[in-house]
Amino acid sequence: MFILYRLIKLAIICVVFFTLYDLIAFGEIAWLGRLITSLGL
Image (cartoon, rainbow, N blue to C red; front, side, top):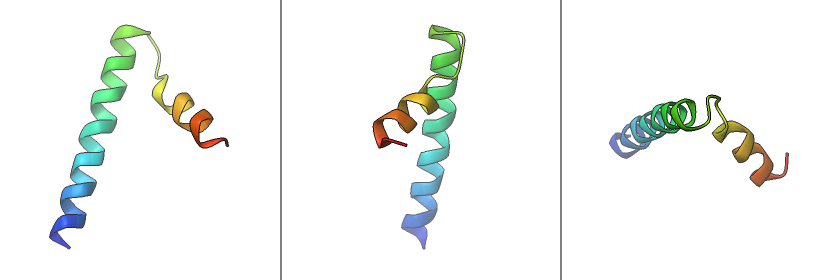
């Protein structure tokens, strides 16, 4: 359970970081579109 909590916390930090980076670099949230395209959805 502790490991699951740490993984969720890491995922939230990554989402915040990628969102801020995309907003600064591209002016839009592009990581979500890239994720969906790479998964083939």
